[in-house]
Length: 305
Image (tube, rainbow, N blue to C red; front, side, top):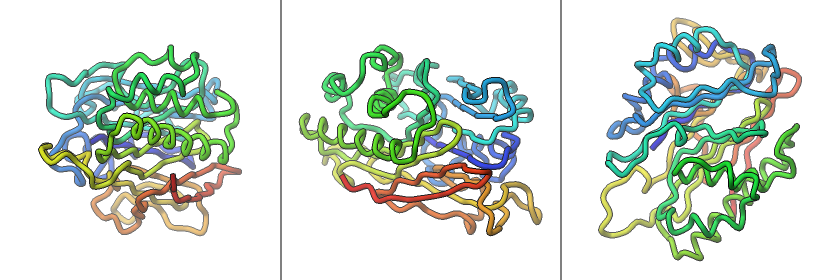
């Protein structure tokens, strides 16, 4: 089970999210609090949008299949960049020689000539049965971009195929509709393949101006009688917090409370041991946060497909 972190709002030094809190994102790669029996050792990826940079619609992209807590280059980069939006992913896979650990499988995914990225926490069980039936729902320009072996990259290609445009200023309604249509397509193909195994699909999507995230699972509670215990036979956690700014206040890292909503974080688990200022996202929910005039507008929607 992977770990994902997304930030939107006031520009923030990335180190404040990845390294400094007591349950920092990088610490979650080797000591996750909500998944203590499984580590996230299959790579780290990050996309970050800085409005002050050259070509601000295009994000910084950093990916490595290596262990992030040994990565000196990542630490140096995190001390320097100051984006208004960040999407980061720690890849976790089952401990098996069959798993493919490569740069092409590291999230977030962002195809050539697009400005929208996706990261996924979960797994589509029996995905090999589904893969080639999904091709009819993917536009050719995206199908040819798939390079890795993950179900997540295929989900990304389906999502892009359901957007009215591949680049530009995406509207919240278009994003929400494309996410729901993507889930419907996956559900249709699962039914066609007679797959009824619990499959969580927590998606995180951003283009630097918004963050959309789902807490969702297909066929919750269903698992083969002879299956081994798996983190994917349950709901994956999802939390968010918002306020004026995130940082070190009163001897701890937390979101500074205010009537002003100018900073927003949503992640697989809180960045601090004290989760008092964090809200757990209900199951079957889509959360969308938009940055408009330096304010973050947050909406949530039930997922009913």
